[in-house]
Length: 258
Image (cartoon, rainbow, N blue to C red):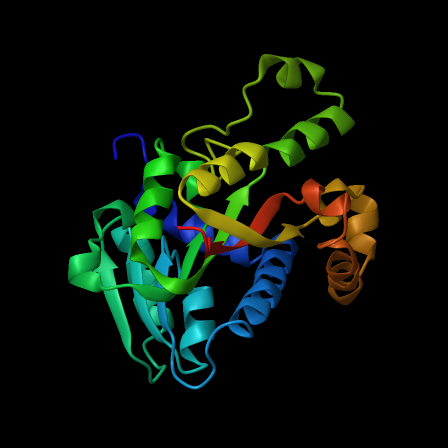
C-alpha cells in the first residue's frame, strides 16, 4: 500500500474545503440521492450491514446510521477516523471503527456486507484494482457497491475549456501530492473494465457536479444553492451530461453469471 494517500496531515483542511463549500454540499446531496436509490433496491425488513471504506469525516456514515443501519467504518488516516468517531458519537447505532485501509480487512474476520461505500478512494491509491478486489471479497452475493471516483474526463474537459492545452497534452492530470486534488484521476472505461474482471456489473451511473464546475465563477456565485442542485439533479443521470461529472458514481452489483 506504499503510495496510497494518508490524510492525517490534511484532515482539518479536508473537512472545511470539501464539505464546507457549495461544491462539497452538492456532492453530498447528489451522493445521498444515489444511496437512496440503492437502499430502495436492498432489503427493507432489517438493518443493513454497511462498510464505509475510507470513511473520511463520516458524513455519509452518520446519515446511514441515523436510518438504523449497522456500520463498520475504516480509514487509513487516524485523524479522519477520529473526526468520524466524533461525528457519530451521539448517534444511537451499531457502529464499529477500524483504523486500517480497506485492503487489510479480511472477510473471515469482518464478514460480508449488504452495502459497501467506496467513495473518493480509487483516485488516491497506487493499486486501485487490488482495492476493488478486496471490496468484492467483502460484498454479499446480493449486496451493492457504491463506487465514487474522480473522473479524468472531467479534468481534461475543464482544462480544455480553460485553454490549458499544454497540461492536456502532457497527460499529467494528478494534483500536487500535498494538495486536496487527487493524484490519480480515473478513466471510467478503465474502472468499468476492472469491475467486469471481478464479475461485477454496473446497474446505474450518475455524474456528480456535471454543471457547477464548468460555470463562470460570477454566474456560479449569482445562483442559489437550490437552483444549482435542481439543475444537477436534472442532468446527473442523463446522457451525455453524466460523463462530465467531476466525480462519477456507480451502483455496482455481483453478476448473475458467476
